[in-house]
Image (tube, protein in one colour):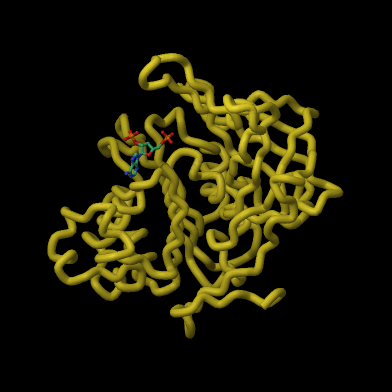
Length: 326
Ligand code: A2P
């Protein structure tokens, strides 16, 4: 039904989850739009070992203006051809900007890009990801070809104030949550918002200054980090994002038990399994069943859960939004 909100089956009644109809495929990869880069800056600490950049595009005057929401992605067409002489395939990047764009008027959108730098396994020669390095190299004023937007499922509900939000991100999986947190905090509301960001070292945290500032400004926003290869600033041992459900159980457990909370997970494939397991360990049955349906046999042996059991013995509900990638 074009123009009307899409109600998610199985979640009707109080706490119903209604997602907006978002614009899709305004530009196809074979007919991309050419726009200019307006900003390209590092979004980690200067001491980070990897290179992650925040890149902004001026989409004013194009169909993308005002039409791209956080949780969607845009396609990037790197120039040139691959080893077989074919144009490079489109690569999708998550939108990092809020609904009103970086400029408050929907004219400037952004993404978060990590340079792919690796060694070929067999030849041990340098491997550079085509699109990520192309995007990271772009200078202000240079042109880039975009398609999209893509995706309609991993978005905020139509009525922000009907829910509370718990976001889990690893690495550049933070991109959609940057825009979503900015959207949620931009309006007066009682909704609670908690973000857990995971990275190897504290220097790798993305948009850390922004989230720290927002958490100081908004009592209803909690920003937590989970550093996997060194101790936490609060003295806890190295941890993954799901471990924050244990260390911050009072707050996060209460959110997950209040009947209003939606959980969004974005980042490395595998992180959803760890989050599901931790939820099963700590949540009372009535709270857990809002998010997961677990077969009794699986429930009796949470430690043995593996990815093959997902969508089978362990199924997530419509209250959980997952965007994970290898
Ligand atoms: P680690 O690599 O130390 O095992 P980045 O994308 O910047 O590399 O960050 C990804 C973060 O997610 C790292 O801290 C990484 O930890 C962590 N991570 C890796 N696998 C999982 C998983 N299955 N669940 C949660 N976090 C994970």
